[in-house]
Length: 98
Image 1 (cartoon, one colour):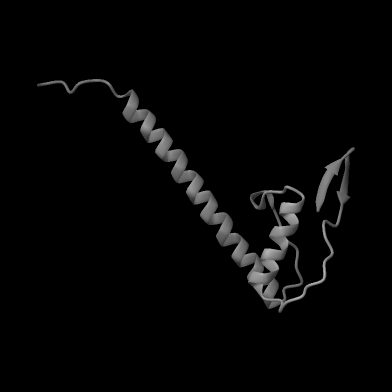
Image 2 (cartoon, helix red, strand yellow):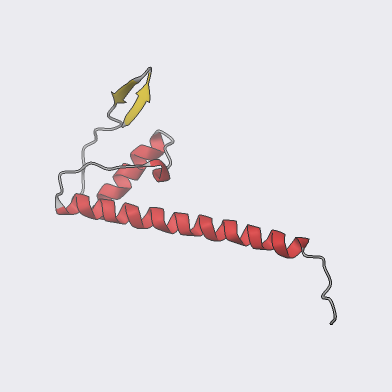
């Protein structure tokens, strides 16, 4: 984890765990999500991921990007529904006749 405090960049390791299963992208992604959850970090707060470009880590990044994209799309749809509801609810004008 990297953050700024007292005008300097701080680097911290959030977790160092033994992996007990095959290092598939799905397993690694779930392991990372568990660590984030432990520290109450929303996965949408991730800005970058640094890896060694091994195929399974690239798969983790791809899976994470898909999850974030789905979440953002859902949030945008929810927001647009709210905006549309407001417009519909506030539209009390009756049609004018010509």
